Amino acid sequence: MESSELLSVTNQFGQPVGLPLTWQPVSAPQQHPLQGKHVQLVALNVRQHGSDLYQAFCAMPNPGMLWTYMPYGPFNDIEAFQSWLESMQKLPGAYFYVLQNPGRQALGQFALTAIDTNNGAVELAHVLFGPALQHTTAATEAVYLILEHVFRLGYRRCCWKCNALNAASQRAARRFGFRYEGLFRNAMVVKGRNRDTAWFAITGEDWPALQQAYQAWLTPENFDSNGVQKQSLSSLTGNLC
Image (cartoon, rainbow, N blue to C red):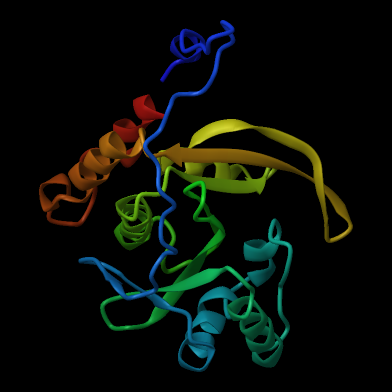
């Protein structure tokens, strides 16, 4: 709803107030597997996925580039990486998912955090895609699967936050349909440097149109015989966010 429409909703004193809602708190997300055609989302298990994720995130040329804007990493060896991964798995109120290819190889991760069941809000965070997952249909399908799960549960809002200097993350957020909401200046100190945080979000009102955009993009007819997209997701979501 546009701000002008919101201003037309007033109380008995003529003051603008929010829309009345028939609202019940929602359930916490469930970490059962989410299956797509190109990717499967499963709950993080360090013993099962640690080695694959180390290969995906750390065993590549210039691995530090993946970690520049993250508040942790890079890691010099698999022991340090798995120790960090275990600490992530134990974070209270965080649901970590591993992104597996059809061969069950772990290629990436993300998490649902800041889960507020009373108000129906959640954050998609700790997004790390290894090089083999970046810019793939599987990566986009994974984001679709988790968003579909969140909004099917009745959540009203899913946000995406990133370092304001992380241009790639901002492009990804917009491509995935997250709408830019603003900049939190001097929000954090990360690795001894100032971090301004850019905020993006998708709301429950946004989701039906975005869901159709994702489904249209993911349909086999949108790809040629070489797997090249005919219509970009950005062209489908750009006018929606």
